[in-house]
Image (cartoon, rainbow, N blue to C red):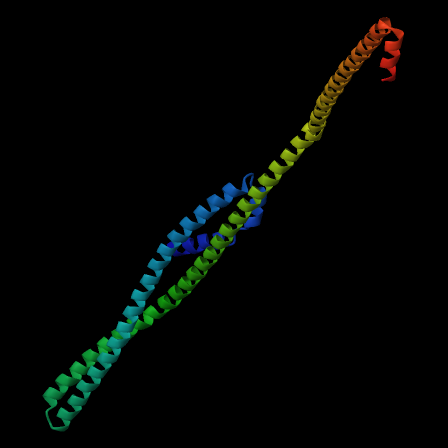
Length: 246
């Protein structure tokens, strides 16, 4: 029963539909982690049980081999005793001949018993060998499934991380669209242009003020010249004309 239950458990686990379980799971990654643990533990338990089953089979096989060897050995002893009995009887020593014939019968009885034990062990060896083969096959299937589970889990985790990264990028893009930084740059550019215009206005105002100062200076020189000429006229017409021609 123990062997059959182990085989049944291995078969059930080996036939597990991973994709169907994943489709029904709310968190496939957690399910896969649990399945990997369950499979790993089941494989370790099954390996121990299979190893014990194989060990028991090897013991039965050793007993069978010993029975076969013993049967052959008792057969040789029976033949030797029978031959000795024939030799003694041919020489007229019937008493010792009977003793060796009896000894040959004992050896033949031992041979018969060893052959019977070997024959009885054959069905057990055959059935146990079939069980061991099935258990080994089940273990191989479990190991294959475990590899599939591990690969599936790694693939799923990688895909989950990719989805998270894509979601973050999309959220960042959405935030950028909502903030519209180009409008902020435009406002800043307008502010700079206003400051530049203000500086240009100040420069232009300063230049016009300087021109006005020079114009007032020229007016002062002109007025001085007029006053000088007027003074010269008052000194005398001749002198003033000479001054003018000069």
